[in-house]
Amino acid sequence: MLCSGGVGRAGPSEASVMVEVLTRQGLAAERLILDEASLDTLQSVAVAARTVLAQTLARGDGDGHVVAVSDDYHLPRIRLLLAMLGVPSIAGPRTTGWLRGPVSHRLGMGLREGAAIPYDLAIAAVRRRQLLS
Image 1: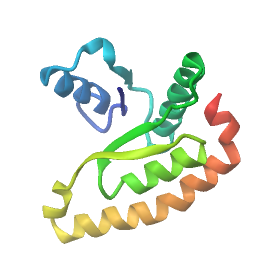
Image 2: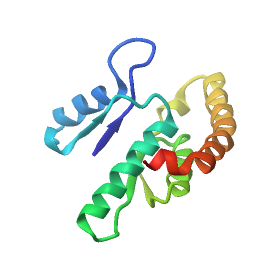
Image 3: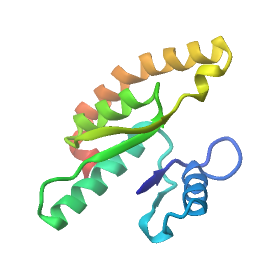
Image 4: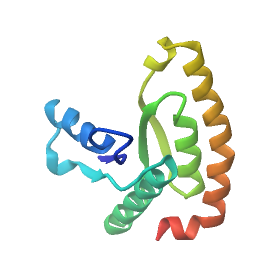
């Protein structure tokens, strides 16, 4: 399992928080891959794609895919980027707590994703080879 996300404005990295939660829930630490270098969605997706493609190549079975876990508003962008990089994905568990937040927050997240999807897809299309190497 790849836990991805760097340090934000303050506090520990997103990835280290994920590792802490997962190990407390009984997942063996050796099954976790920590990516604290990725600072945005495209970087995290590129790491996931490289990881899956390397493992698929090592196994020789051609059956690698990603189970993407995130907020439900964010999953479409993650899955589109994975597809752009040639990695199949399925949606895993997702959080919906953001739906109970203020309308301004929900609107902001929707607008952010609406702008980020074409932006990230354009970068992924142009830099595909670089992102996968």
